[in-house]
Amino acid sequence: MVDPIFADPLAWRMVKAPSLEELETLAETAFRRLPQKFRALCEGLVIRVEDFPTEEVLDELGVDAERLSALEHSGVIAQARPA
Image (cartoon, rainbow, N blue to C red; front, top):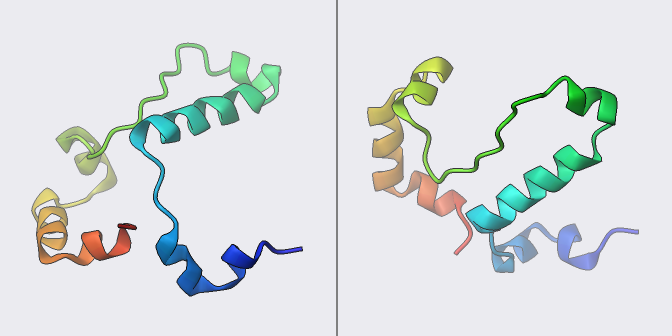
């Protein structure tokens, strides 16, 4: 059965995004739930959650930092974030 809050798309406006610390905890918990055989192959893995990507990451993804900044300043990204 679907939780009523998730059935109505407008109800999501009241839901707040998790903090960076909460996202990091979620990622670490999910990683710990993976099979040991898989985790063993990820030796040295660092889980790090940051607010903004580095220039290096943007370059690797082929994202133009100026365009991303323009989207944020124009309110496009802010509108997608819960208040």
